[in-house]
Length: 166
View 1: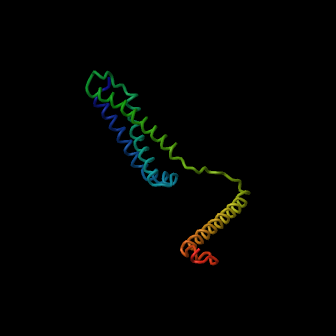
View 2: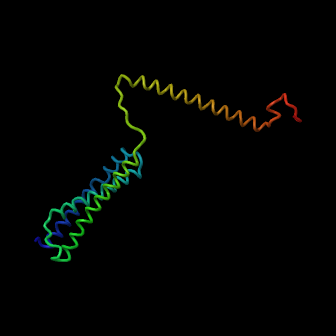
View 3: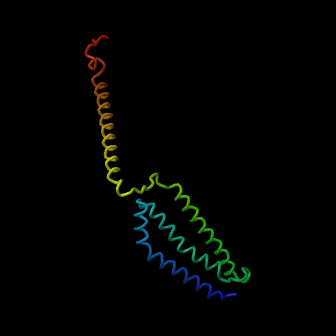
């Protein structure tokens, strides 16, 4: 069995290294995640998940691999045995939630790779599509204005051949 102080010092050093890694990676990771996610809240979620994993995974592995002896030997060893399983549960929960967010939060768009010689043709096609959509939008707007004008003028004014009494 390992001395309790040695176990605590080892866990403390592992925790300190995890905190240092988080502090060192925080800003670059947030910038990269913001570039990927395009939304600040999404980037914050992934950065927080990475922070939890950077702390919990090394501690959980250390607790799994270190010889803690029997949990009945001391209260500290019993607590460390429980902490080991709690950390493993935390890692599993963060991974499950992250996978769920990844699956549910997927974008509806998928990147499409195009050969260089086809880019001009696709840009011309896209320009035509925008032109057709713009025309349709203007036509709908004109039709809406005509209906609004007809309602504003009333039934007799919109049909000049009708008399006011009809």
